[in-house]
Image 1 (cartoon, rainbow, N blue to C red):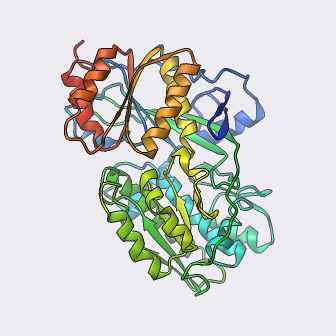
Image 2 (cartoon, helix red, strand yellow; image 1 turned 90 degrees about the horizontal axis):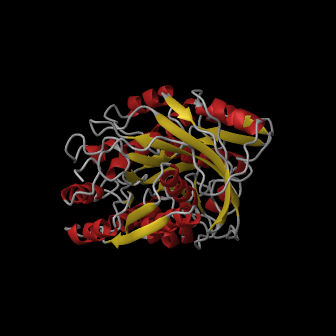
Length: 458
């Protein structure tokens, strides 16, 4: 069972004002969204979040985020370790028909996180090229706000192309939900799912979805720069910069499947008007501990790619952002959430359809308080993703009347986290928020070892 929970909150968080609204019940997320627009919810302080039951774990309640919420984490831990643990992942509900289509591309898929966003990133890029009648990065970038804020709603590529051919102003609502961009390249609306692990360390099918709006603040970078090498050659070339290796490799398969499915749907609808064909060039973003990502970009740019889909890691994106945007290539991430990317110098060519962590951080902190825990410890990896989430979880907890009793920033390349966990234990938290990637399994084992992990003896 999947459900969407009601709440609305308003707060200024970093570069954005956050307004959240959703609808309760057992209806689908799309139905809930429609109901929410008809019946405005009442105002509430930023600390208010959906009422939910406290995790079932018998040790110190643990909360995870999108970087470590997935079945891949549970496979590395003893059975029952994660029972009752909650995690959040930005994104709307994956429908069964979409999952089936993804499995048709990759039958080995286990997780589906960010597959809808990857799919929509490709579709939006293609629609932008069709409307601009150009695959030049700056030309496509100038169309991304118009094609997500028009008057004619369309839900698939074929329908949108037909409306564009009629001269209509389209509003693309895709697999990741309603998408509305503002000039800085961020979405102004988003969904976040709250997942719960079961006794077998896998995610339950029951998910609570929160939907809302992010009212933008701050200055957008102007769209400028030269067209990329592949512009104007009649071929729409998609490059991928997604994690096939590294600490986010579990996100790679669903994201790649989303890209490939989108290309299949574009071709099935007759391709992109004005272009001979669509070509895919795949690449590995790796993670920031290696040079894999930089080598991938160095290989892909001379191939004349028009859009680069990725990265999953905000740090990986930041490591190549100048290189990509200076080449005049549109860069479109399905999963980056670091607030630093909202205003990073990008010539207006960097876009993402995952929300900034001003949203996820605020929600996680509020959720912990709503579950009844006021003394909170935070462990986060040291990089742009970890720092951004840490800041916004901290803000939500403290502004909501709670206390961050320990805030430990760790080196994700470390081989031993005993000292970091000892600091958390010494603070005596009522709940722990762990912001990390693949190394989270080792940290959780250390939490259990020291008696403060989920389902650990007190």
